[in-house]
Length: 89
Image (tube, rainbow, N blue to C red):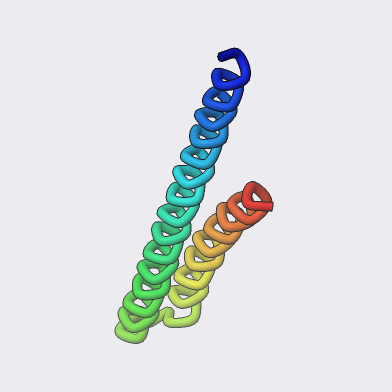
């Protein structure tokens, strides 16, 4: 009877670990999808702002500001991806 309990206990433990791993993978995938959406949104925002800059007198300054915003957003998203990659390893 004791051996049966150990086998069942081990099976339950393995099942719990596998469920945890699956949940972590789903969370990671959801985070990667969110980052992808945010990256696409940042690029669309940059394109819109750069286009709007063309109607202004100081085009260069406006475009440089839009580029600075895009770089900051992309750097933050790259950092989040790096954290996900390191956690996955």
